[in-house]
Amino acid sequence: MAYLQSSFDTRFSLQLSPNAFLVRLGRREIFVCRDFRQRSYAVNPLLDCSTGVQAGHLEMLFFKKWLVILSKANW
Image (cartoon, rainbow, N blue to C red; front, side, top):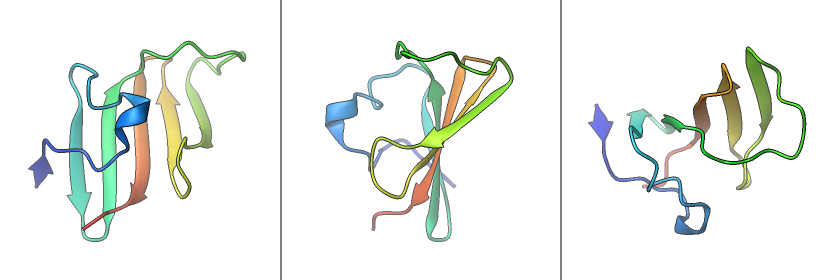
């Protein structure tokens, strides 16, 4: 089931990204959007993993374009 609302903090402006969606699977959330942030480090061209901007989040960047964020659901 997909929800258009995002539980992520507004200070990171992820909700304003075009083509974004959020999927909840049980107690987990998967947020997918186009990456628009400028990174100050060299990014792996296929898959780049890092800790999220909030505690408990994992960010995966696919093909330098798609950002997938895994986290716990905030009910």
